Image 1 (cartoon, rainbow, N blue to C red):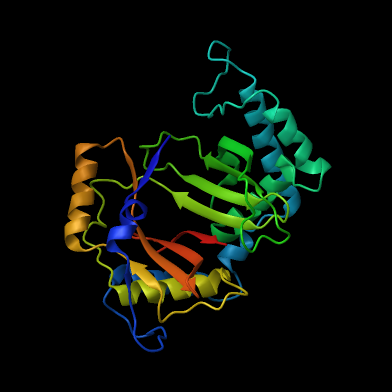
Image 2 (cartoon, helix red, strand yellow; image 1 turned 30 degrees about the vertical axis):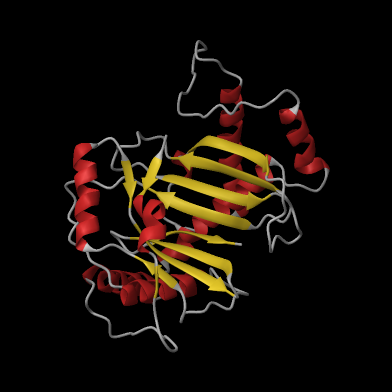
Length: 300
């Protein structure tokens, strides 16, 4: 199962510095219809006493029940071979050296590290916060493991070189228009979400191929998402020097042509904001190019 995020692949080519002088969002922007539609839809959803997002936030107990069932099914799958009844080819079997699995199980829970259930509940809680309309009960685990990265990442509080990472999907075929997946990394000691990204396949006959974003519109939408979801609390983001990546008409045509040639690929197109401070990478934000919705973030 492979998702192809074209902007991530080409980011080194198309990312440019933008902005001279202090930047503030322009509330009068009207040139991207998708951005305007999103603003209006979100304002309508938030109006009045009935907040659709809050109404779909699940209690921790229900999230734990959902994850425990999902995780138990995943662990059971890892014990099956291709010849066993009920074998699910959608579950990735990771090959470990002898002793690796036992070592990881001891680290999880026995020495202060989050076990698979604790980490999974943190994950579902964040998905539910960012995407409250998602049907979490439909999801399956493709991969979920604790990895030893060998070095401690900056800003891990407390410091940890172990991280849970993995891949969830909603049980659909990757070319199905209703397919959704989540890729993520969680600090195994602090429980901090290091990164989380949502993907789905673009459709070659959809009506969003004429969408065009300017760098200013990407920055404005990024500012809205960061404020709405409190994604960069404690970080002093420099909007003057932020790197902005988006697509021009030629690149969009190339992406659509690639999808025409290979309808089986899973294609996600993102606008991207990358913040640096003092020469150090600080924060990454992905914005879905077709809808303007949050595609995900990475926060060191």
